[in-house]
Amino acid sequence: MTPRMLPILAAALLALPVIGRPARASEATAAGAPVLVELFTSQGCSSCPPADAFLKELSGRDDVIALSFHVDYWDRLGWRDPYASGWNTRRQRDYRDAFALPYVYTPQMVVDGRDQAVGSDRSAVTALIDRHRRDGGAVPFTLEARGDGSARLVIPARPGLSGRLTLFGYDREHRIDIRAGENSGRRLLNTNVVAVVEDWGLWSGEAVDISHPLPEPREGRGYALVLSEEAGGPFRTGVLGAARLGAAP
Image (cartoon, rainbow, N blue to C red):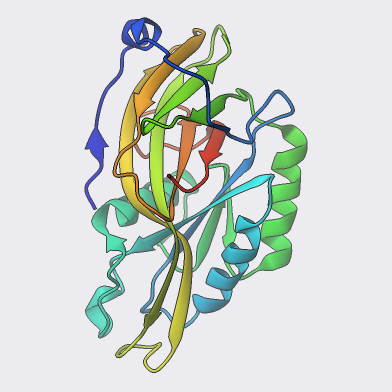
């Protein structure tokens, strides 16, 4: 998976037209943004299935956006994860550096880009989610799907804040029989597997109301748009807000 890089300058954001009425709205409203939970996992890791199951449970919560990022450093141990990518691994390594960890590991869950825990440690992850949910997102925004394969993005003005918008397209569910490696002989269920990454560019605190095409819409495809602090590169941490769309029509 290679992310599409589509920089959008603030002026262009404001200039794009908004056409038609919204078909569906995201859960990010004035009440606060959902908490983003990222699971770094691999089908080649025998410790990951319990975390995969936990992520599936989290994906059913309205106040959580749960995404699964499959890393590729387990592929050399007998089973090549078809959903793994070097981009996902680089993202996790950037979190490693941000959290001053000595190494990357699976399963790992990162909450709102600011805290991390072992992905199968339900109590630790739940406590982090609860804390970030109470804090609320700094920039609640809305993302609304349209019937023409595009989405309407509305961000309120927040002078003094800035960030980068990244869209993640994810597959709702994959079931696969593992034929080698640590999980050989098992049938695994992976949920909200990130398949597409698209850079929607920088935001500089201005009010935004635009329409933007969604990449690779298909049955079972959902989308999450994340606004993160722009602090040194595309993988930097710190989520300012997030919103999601259901499976594309």
